[in-house]
Length: 399
Image 1 (cartoon, rainbow, N blue to C red):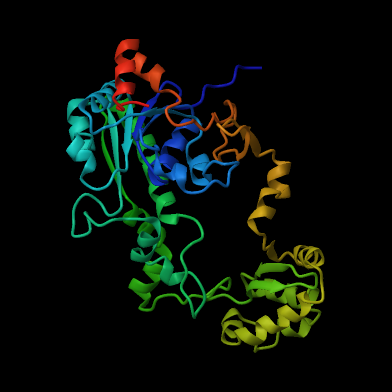
Image 2 (image 1 turned 180 degrees about the vertical axis):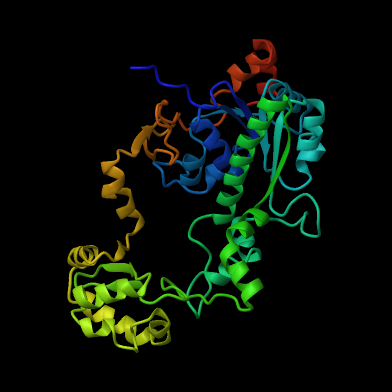
């Protein structure tokens, strides 16, 4: 058998002055693909996401999720000696990523434009809430706030109540565009020899994800309605209770599927050709009656029975699972998607990244680092002596 291919980003070094989710999640993707990621943290507690909760065996769940496979160095960047260490690390790096508050990186000389002018091969990424210019540039940006500004909250929830997404959608959107921006810049550097700045804003990333409701509103004239688990323009498309207390979601995409549903699941084949239900437009106009017919049929079955019958009829369906059930999902188990990663609290269960590289090694799922776990070795790597390191630690510049 041929030897496995190396991971795509082996040999790439990333330095990140990062916190919370957007930048850490982006750089974690790079680490999983083989990059060496050096995470620069504050000496007084590190990345503040370390303190969000203690749910992961005493560690913060956000931090565990976003920071495996990284090296942690704790430095005071307000001290010129700490900032000098970061500059030395960047001088040896391929990629720099930061998501400090607006203006903070520029004051430190760590903004993308400044760094790329000094290091032409460097790819430097600025992640912000609203971008580097415009009236919102200085505005504080947290995930929920950006979800509101981008309109996501307006289309999520029930007709009576808008709600935010249950995951940090704005942070994740920005992270994934930063990740793909780095990959694109690395390809360009391979062809031209030059890096360059990359800018990603949470607002612009999440607004891109709002493409369907935006185009529906801008070109159709009306914003799509909030419909909970239902669909604004398709019926039946919702979650329905079953006899054992479960909930099953189904989606009928066309009138042929409706006829199969009527015959094989509802037990009322005449509904397939009844003008009041035969077309999607008719069913949407009579949504309450349509849903009542489906709810009555599925309410007499257990969730397993309902799913079996729907699948037998070729109807798209799903079980409405809670998070604990997702952790035990039979599909993820059958595909062997779970691994263990090391952490200061011991081994933790983690999901393999969704990018599978046939013929290559498995994603590198390294340990979740303790704060400052790699400080000494990284300081030595930039040329510091043990005496100089001791001095930095004594003065609180390194930890």
